[in-house]
Image 1 (cartoon, rainbow, N blue to C red):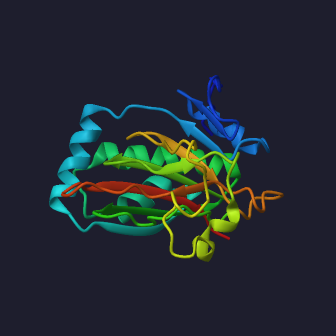
Image 2: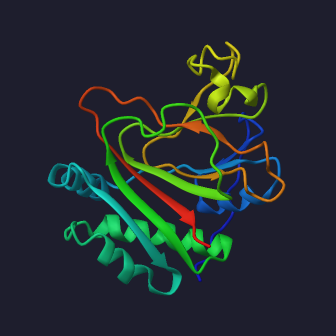
Length: 222
């Protein structure tokens, strides 16, 4: 199994986050003080080109697949059969699945790859999962909040019809953080052991008129 060298630097970042230019930052998700780990990276020109071509050819692309740890490449090739020329995209997804399964000792994972034209989850919320991998290949990235200063009673129905900014969930000084294109993030959820009430608060970004977003997520499968 592939090994990765640690390059971890959290200077000037909220205590909830770990970030680095290496994927080994993902190991930091096991620390209780971190509920998001971000691998900051730039996508190659070839990958960006494949993504743009894939969106143009498949504007309503929506893929849901189970990827087995011992047949990653074959399973991804089958899942992405509508994208025969997207070889670098397939290779990148294979790498993400490999790392995700290795980190959490999973035999399989749930892959979702979809083109979005509007915010899928427009309100801040937490996920009822142990941990989810999220990355945006094109378009605006997911938004998230650090734990400090949040009134979690305003999540869900607690907002009472008010916007996230008006409900009291956060203060006027709360910074809304955003992932960049290419960033790969692990979002710790509510069902991570001993993390009840501390899952990462996040939402989908509002997209500009005509903007398309290509989002991939990976999830645990029991």
